Image (tube, rainbow, N blue to C red):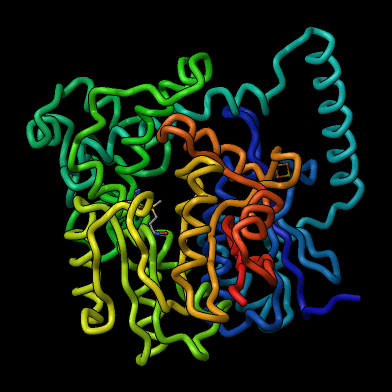
Length: 451
Ligand SMILES: C[S@@+](CC[C@H](N)C(=O)[O-])C[C@H]1O[C@@H](n2cnc3c(N)ncnc32)[C@H](O)[C@@H]1O
Ligand code: FES
């Protein structure tokens, strides 16, 4: 059975540099163009396009196969895409000049490839070679560090519409030789292009990393660069058991970057949270540690009768005010500078939100907050915790387990917690009907109700 008229498989198996593979022959670009062309011709309901692993024909890449009839293509180039989509996927006529129909030769090649692969694996295993996946995981900070340094130096903005290493070095006040090496590495990572000695931004870099672009994410991403310095203390932190002060801690720029980073994720999730909680009967909301205000803004927009109050640290509230004012909801969203670990929360709220908050604090601090939230809620009101929630044995999901270390290096006593821990804390502090709501993405909700 084939639910689509055509099911198009494109090999995108990544292999070590220097080893023949479909991506090395351009299959990722072909796949991207196929997506666009299928969409442009309105064929996406007829054609299922799927990237797949190695088919054992790597020397003839990019290799692809179209089912249900099993038409194989090899050495497909970006310039062939329009013809394949028009002739084959729209008109049902395969492009003969690209079709590979020598089944015995294909089978022999794939079988030989499989045998060679297994023999090479066995030889490496016998020699005690470090497996590729471990080697890659260990070195995976190289590309990351490259991009973070480029963002810190604002290289993508300096590249602008095209410049050489000397011009870029002068703009960012950096050494031309070192800048050239970094630029070349960024080209190797696919984040810049190079023609002669002139570097230019790719479409993605220009869109996401260049100041002035509508979708510029640089500020939010700089938070990851800032946190890098904290992660570098991980070894000593694990020895000592507690966060180690570093000389960059009090940089006010970090706060702006941090809130920009929070806004990036929160803006995406806020609509889902509002939908999951619903707006019926919601009149007053308290958003503890609201940061950029993304969740209050989403509630205010979805529920014009609701009033939201954001409590955050004094140094953050002016930044929150900028986001709230830009969203045009200042009449519904008020701001309070304070400390949620000490302040009285007030009373009569229908919802109190703790979005990405509990991981900053210890078990005792969270229970103390929950207790005070309980007193601040109106009858039938809800406490909503959104966080990266660990499995019972705390070894996954991977993001939540790694995020726990992020909190180990960045906070005095924070961590990721499990669903069971949140449920126990809520029950111990008087909440009933405690339940979990799964959201798309890495964070979920735990909701408890006041009787
Ligand atoms: C991880 S961010 C989450 C921001 C926002 N809730 C979101 O999900 O986008 C944590 C927020 O809590 C605030 N915060 C940290 N400690 C606080 C405290 N003791 N009192 C009030 N706010 C605090 C931070 O300033 C920051 O805005
Ligand atoms: S990498 Fe594509 S067939 Fe092997």
